[in-house]
Image 1 (tube, one colour):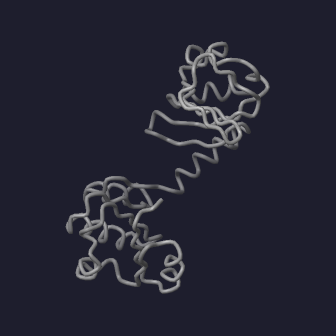
Image 2 (image 1 turned 90 degrees about the vertical axis):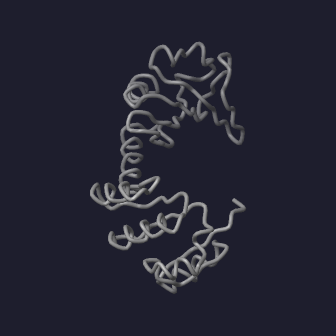
Image 3 (image 1 turned 45 degrees about the vertical axis):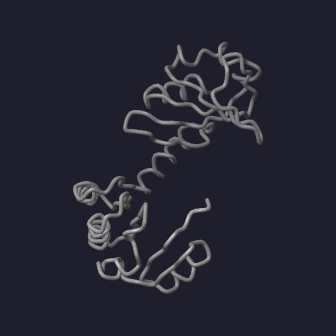
Length: 196
């Protein structure tokens, strides 16, 4: 995306792999404050910390990055305790990839029409749903999804075309991907009753 990326890892094989996609890839111990300073991380706008199973290294590196002055630090957490510690030391966003993927898979398993699922908060999400025969050649106004289910269609993806903020008279065709936002309970109701 035309951004400069510095990748740091202790494993030389990973550094070699990262060198193909990062602007700079360095073999170093990210838990060492002097090494981080020598690498110039104080000039980094956004840092991502992902240490696999090493919770201690994750916490120490996140803390060092915040103390050095990196404005935005995101870190991967292994569990809820790890999450609490990362939040308390000032990490801006704590990521649980396994939990997030499990939620996506659960939505795919419960509904064949789900293409993707993005959790915005604990109560709100964006979901991509494949339009079924039930939607074919009907307008957004005719379907009345907002009044029936409390959800909003914020976009439609049709082949290579993406329609953002579609008008009420926009026709939907079978196999369009509907991008829907709403409260999770409303989206679930729509998935069960409206999207089939």
